[in-house]
Length: 84
Image (cartoon, helix red, strand yellow):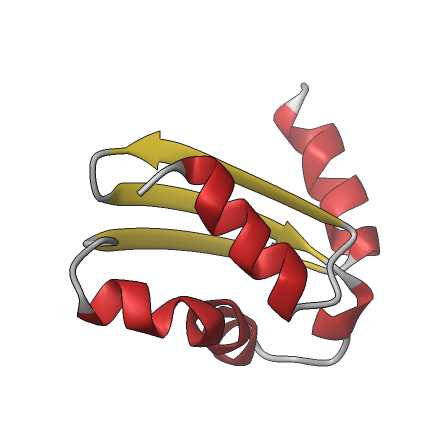
């Protein structure tokens, strides 16, 4: 499965401002940014991102998935910290 396919699935299924997908083989990392995550716990954010990908996880096209989900405000703060 290509990273572009995962990105497209998430963009079509969720109201996201930004999606960054990296990885290869069947191991991927996702950074999802959207106001839809406002007020959600970390677990609920991850469940929201997992949901549209479940059939690909079940078929083993995606074996490992690391998810970081942010509101736009959280992303702006974390992005600044990463660039230090």
